[in-house]
Structures are given as C-alpha cells and as structure tokens.
Length: 219
Image (cartoon, rainbow, N blue to C red):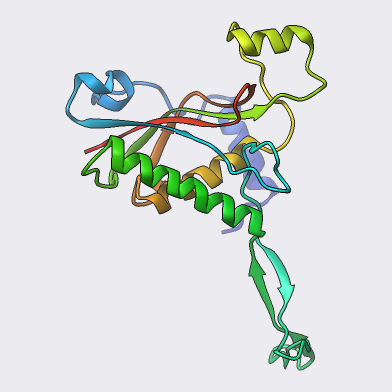
C-alpha cells in the first residue's frame, strides 16, 4: 500500500492528538557499554587510536579527508576506442562505463588502514575484531588552522581552553564514512553495521591535523 497524502495526514494527526504511542526512555536491561567505565567491567574492551592523514599534492597539510561518491568513466579498449554495446531494453547503441574512486582517497585510506594495523599489533596484541555491538566514545577530526581564524581562536587552540569547531566542508558524516570503512578493513570490527552508538564526534581546528578516536566493543 502506497503512502499517499491522505495516509500521511492521518498519521501526523494521530501523533498530534496523542492517539499514537510514542517511544519512551525506560531501559530495564543494563547496558555496560553505555553506563559503566570500560575498565570497570569485563564485558567490553576499549581501544584508542591517533591517526595522521598523508600529506599529498591535493592535501598538503594532511587534513582529514571525506569519503566521496564513486565517479563514473567511459570504458575504452587498448586502442583507446570507446567500448559500446546494443542496449537490449532500448535497442540503441550504448557505452560501457566503470566506477572508480579518486587516487588521493584510495591512497589515504590505505595509509590510515596501515596505521591502524600497526597500532593494533603493538598496543593490542592478540586482538580479534569486534563481532558484536561497538560504541564510539569519541572521534575528533582535527584540521590545520586557517588564516581567517581570529587571534583569540588561535590562542584557544594553543591553550586548549575551548574548542574551535570547523563549520565548513567536508561534511562530518562523510568524514565518518571513510573512518568506519578503514577501521573495518583494518580488522577493528567485522562490519561497520556493528556500530550501535556514537558520542563526542566533531570536527575542529588544532595544531596537528589528524584523527583521535576511542571506541569499545563487547567481547
């Protein structure tokens, strides 16, 4: 059954007049990850990492980079000719295409993955990927300072008196996507769908660009 204008209005009126039961916040079963310090229980293991993005021509400061949509290009044969085929649905000539990710993004992801694996092997010997619920406790995407920052902002960054947030692109959710993909590839968790809660995720300016991430997973 489609969700048309009439059904939408009926649904919204049911909410407005209190005729629909709404979610409420009583949790009867204790979730250690959300309410206890990880070091005080044996149900969860805590991890923390500090990562640097590799400086390159298109990112000289090594600032955090965001995952982007795949790009599409026309496929060509060895002679450079566009590869075509007859579309069975339209009967018209069409072209073969293929998707790709920019080299700067794949190279950045590789470097982040290697850092994670290196830190895992040194700090968390014998670690096995989380295969149950994972909780992000903190994830800071730190960008190099820009010329337009005020003197007071620069002083705050140097002293740590307050956070100077980055309010411009890239989008926070796209920054997260690259990080979660890389952490999955590095063997932190079996699938980023395991992430069930997030706290303290933000982007800011700092003296050294990169990522600080802390998480815990049920073992």
